[in-house]
Image (cartoon, rainbow, N blue to C red):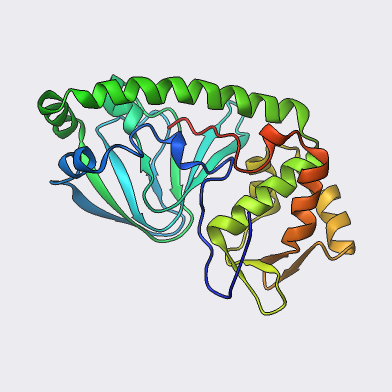
Length: 254
């Protein structure tokens, strides 16, 4: 994970934001073109809900522009961000396959443009191209492996390692390099959201972030985080098992 130049740096596939987490993402280009050839365009403003858990699953969306977050909420109101998604991701596909309500909520982190296809369109396309189902079987098996990796990350990574991994991933998706060589995350992120994305308690996240700010590993100005990415990467290289470092695990159940 490296940040170069002064332009925006986009996600290449890190842990909590792995493109492989979407079942239909990576569908062979010819099949993907068939599936979305009659898609309708939708627009979603920053902060808006694409859908929430429990909503009917009438179709799926491909993100063309913007950033989305995938969220689950406990019965007592505690929120956990499962992943952040960039352009090219597909969301809502599970409900299209099984016909059940949405299992998580999707919100815009930035203004978004999406392509929408209905469940009826999907069924029609799979009748013409049954090889889509063979592809889905392989992807579902891969998702089970990814889930195991994420459980392991929750079990073995320290709070500091989880936060370092999350900040690096946010930098990949939302950041750009400044003149001083630091990564600036051009989006205001609340500590609660950062803790939820890392899967740690807010109090623990506050303690670690306070230490990093004193050491200038992470600074904050105008609500934006600035990261010393090399120091954060070293904390993962020395502390985390190789298979749990950024880019090695994923979990995004949509």
